[in-house]
Amino acid sequence: MGVRSWFRKEWFLLALVGAVALASAWPDLGRSGGLLRLEVVSNWGVALVFFLTGLGLSAAALRDGALKWKVHVLVQLSTYALFPLLWWGFSALFGRWLPTDLALGFAYLCALPSTISSSVAMTVLAKGNVPAAIFNASVSSLLGIVLTPLLVALMGGTSGATLPFGEAVWKLTQLLLLPLVAGQLLRPLLLGFYMKHKSRITLIDRWVIILLVLSAFSDSVASGLWRDHGAELLVKAALGAAFFLAAVIVLSRLAARAMKLSVEDEIAAVFCGSKKTLASGVPMAKLLFGAHPAVGVIVLPIMFYHQLQLILCSWLAQRYAARVRGT
Image 1 (cartoon, helix red, strand yellow):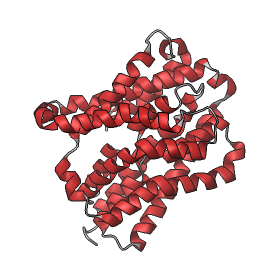
Image 2: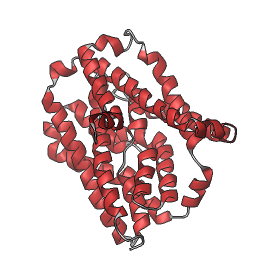
Image 3: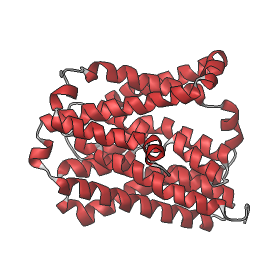
């Protein structure tokens, strides 16, 4: 792979790193009240992302995947029970060495829903049960509107760091659920336009995430992020993210085999149950922790987790795909 091809493939990762670097060098550009006024455009960008998500969801595919109840149980328990349990163990073992804001970031990572796009893409690559993956990733996103702020409140233990639960759910409903439902309702009218311009439309959520990362880190740098923490913070965030990813993949595979799922169903369960969404995670962090001075630290674990899950799950998908299907 040539350098140009690598840059084209990895441009999103490079843009995220660039956003962090730009925020570190020039925090007044992206901070609240700064030159770009990103706090004004962020809510509209989040709503647009979820409108387009609703526009792209196929109701037929959701119906096809709805009958695999064992897969649903495993995926949702992995996402909203296994991750929090691992967090409590992780916090008990390593919490004393973690900055408070980074510990909250790991709690937030473990409370997030699954991601739709890469869960389905990895399931396709691995020759798994794609309808079940679409159904579970979509249901996980909807459950996250209520369960994510609830779990953050239970695990975070940070008075005043997050919105009150009811207010958080209402705000997430307004900016995530309602646009998604609107996209579904308008799908019959706009599907042709969406499919024609899909390659361009899929870039929108990436750029919204980049702007939100720039905004979050600009606020944190302006509040003393790098003054109070150094490179050690990045190392701890990366190692913690790797721990959670490896643990959940191993445990979900063992659970799938204990439940005697087919290989196709195991693939869907492992990829949907181990994934965490960066596309929803950064916008939700801005909503839940918008007033928190260290929101840039809070989103560090999901940023590292996102890249690690793409690398490890791509390798795992290729291993699955090389097996004889159905064995």
